[in-house]
Image 1 (cartoon, helix red, strand yellow):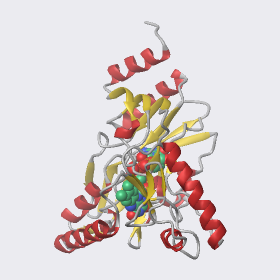
Image 2 (cartoon, rainbow, N blue to C red):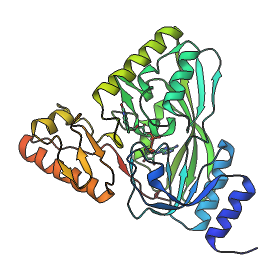
Image 3 (cartoon, rainbow, N blue to C red):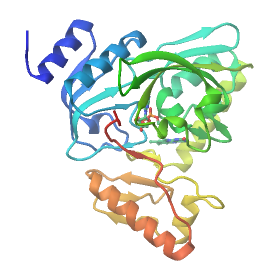
Length: 316
Ligand SMILES: Cc1cc2nc3c(=O)[nH]c(=O)nc-3n(C[C@H](O)[C@H](O)[C@H](O)COP(=O)(O)OP(=O)(O)OC[C@H]3O[C@@H](n4cnc5c(N)ncnc54)[C@H](O)[C@@H]3O)c2cc1C
């Protein structure tokens, strides 16, 4: 039965059991609480369904993109004019694999993964317990904190490869092939001939002590509550650490704490955070970022690069 591309895509989702939402406000799915509606918001649940789903999305001709837990994303006020595929809480199973390995779907939260590991007396992921992302987003960003980085324990990734020509397919790649460095993975620099969506991950951990791991996690969560403005929406540290300094230190030294553009503000509590005081728009955040960059460059000679990412269509 022919229909519009959107009707056909919705029919595909219904037939395959993929949960979907129409005209879904992205502000409901980003930690900044900013962003207009996505025309279609898909929340797949099964790894094996992703290649077919992406093929159907591409056949529709709509621009599309992928997000995780939305904790490092700035979405535009006008929304996203196509399909947002969320690899998030509906895609979040975690299981032990052998003695020391954990396999999880990319939508599992880092909080759940680190707790799962600790509960099974496995150590190595305690650092991640307070990072509010999903595992796929964390691999994409090579998220880290308190001396740990997600790449350190990652063994392999099951990804959906989407070639420019031909059908999407699943493949397993070793972590060493992902070119990790500070807040960087190969996923950030996708080849326009082929993009990839992270579907599953395997981590190798060490035998540890459940109580010690849980206590360490509690300590790290307490540190975050003390130092970070968790009472306001944000995307965490707004800027990457520049070589030779710290973004928050530079911003503080320039006297910018508390600076505002509309409802976007440099946190009074932590100069590295841009917070949404209530009704900040995407434009206000971008304007504040650009003013900070200009002032810090002029006063200190450091160039600050945003850590969060503007939600943009995939290259293919
Ligand atoms: C209060 C707060 C504290 C934070 N603290 C830290 C911290 O200590 N350390 C740190 O590193 N970060 C921190 N962050 C930032 C953020 O939580 C991390 O970058 C996190 O890893 C992002 O994961 P996510 O699932 O939310 O990704 P999203 O924000 O949803 O997406 C981030 C990027 O990854 C891509 N992506 C997401 N999932 C996939 C997938 N499955 N396949 C392919 N691409 C994908 C998206 O397209 C996007 O470009 C913090 C954020 C907040 C709000």
